[in-house]
Image (cartoon, rainbow, N blue to C red; front, side, top):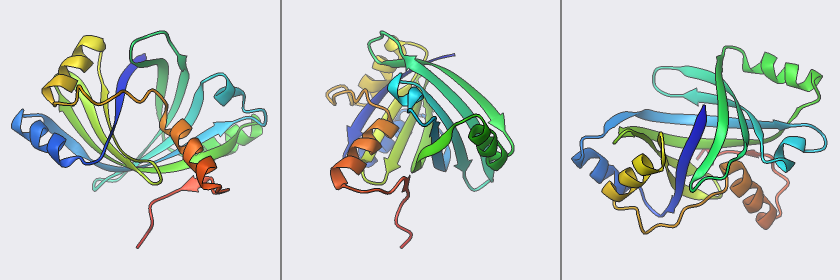
Length: 187
């Protein structure tokens, strides 16, 4: 499957939530997601702009686990890459399998996500420690994404082409931290 998405850095979600509600978008839920990224000792995946991830979704209903492979970005106006996602039941066993294959966890990121279905697109309101708030609009093609962006009044915000993992790596380096498990403060 080809994933096409637009990522926008924002200061607040409230204006977008108000527009989503006013435009009858369907709220799909609030999730706490933990994304664990894996690579070999040479960072072969990262260096070739690919990713192997185990994602844990948690909400009021329960937990789901998904294994995702993302290919290198393709030449496209918005961030576009091949994506394969598989629902799995046992994250620990999968991580152990990766270890035997020479892959280790290189980064783990916690993320709060509110998901909406709007204008043929998925609109995710994401908050991450260290890097802040983002709105992702994922759709079947550029036209759907641009239309959703305009309807939400977000067309003047510049596109952020980097992945969350890349943005987090930059923030970690800037902070001089050695921490590889990035979570929200549990105050």
